[in-house]
Image 1: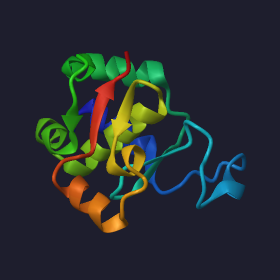
Image 2: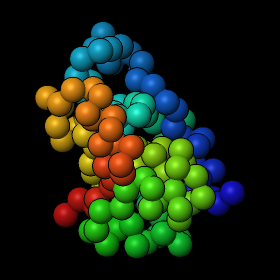
Image 3: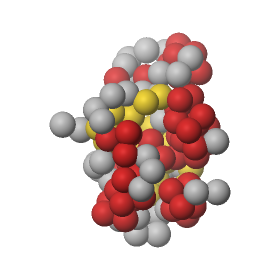
Length: 131
């Protein structure tokens, strides 16, 4: 397993943040940087995830992810060898402000849950470097 995947899996969990600052907001909008909804599941950062450490791991072999193009979880899963690690990587990068997560849940919250899930299954969960 790569150092990037190890870092991501040890600094993320599925589910909503319950840090104490946002536990009262469960089920509603949480503060930025606490939880990201990837349509399939929500991701929260844990264990003091650090943007500089994460960015150093991205720059060590995955710097193409910072080129401004969109990379969906299917493509990233092929690069990393795991779609779950790809989704968690997209989520952590979003929470740390490295890139934006582009998901049906974030971009089109007004659509039905079934339609958002169908779109996500077709690859419409992606990352794009912030400008």
